[in-house]
Image 1 (cartoon, rainbow, N blue to C red):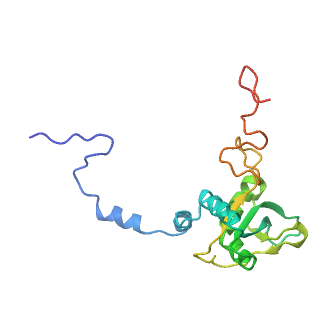
Image 2: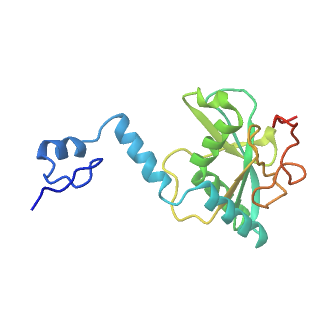
Length: 185
């Protein structure tokens, strides 16, 4: 008998107008790149999944190599970002290419100056003097590989490369010492 209660946008009785729908359908410029990034993130390339895949590949005897980042077209030294793994050594370049987005995102966490640089370069190799740049272009899909990043310096819980326990700190596995006021010493 009475009209439905309208609370916080729920129970709206009118359909949205067609102009509003049409404006939402048009995606261009910055919104298009945000949509593409969101689709890439939801495609299964997450840090946690890659960490788990890396652990499984290493346990199964897969090949590993270090991954590196630096500003594109520069001669500055490479920053080690983490380790990529693949079923065999021949697949390591393809694995590094597939993990490129996560490698460069993690480089920004390790060294915030990378967040200000427009173009970054990603590479792979066991030694900073012999880093091979990752191929450019669209990364391959359906590649069996894994990635584990080095611990970022500002993280409370750090994972060292040799310690695969979730939530472990860099040294003892315990929370950092603090005084009676809760300040970390």
